[in-house]
Length: 163
Image (tube, rainbow, N blue to C red; front, side, top):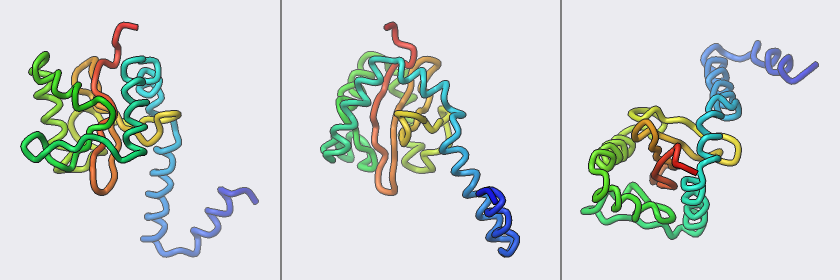
């Protein structure tokens, strides 16, 4: 008997609500391990600028030393890893429309579920598993992860930067 048959056999004896919960869990696992978002992930993996930000952010995330803005700067639910705070501040000066879009998405993520909403959130896979991507514009992305306490910003920038 293979694993799928064993799961089927055991589910036969479970009450319907538990079987529905099991199906939801299987869908979650499928979405986590199926490379539906492979195109987005691969494009980010090929972007030196975003990958450099992500590598730096991974270090500050592991050390828990990311920058937490004051309430006046931004809600404390967000932590900027690596040099993403400097990039955030540069956007304020250089590209007000993109900065406004980023602020709108950050506020939405703080209020609601970071897995859904504006910017077509996509779970990344392969080496970027655990990270998410949202569109700020046709070419710009916000790369982040989150837990029950905070949203961690890993990269902000051009998805299709010139190489």
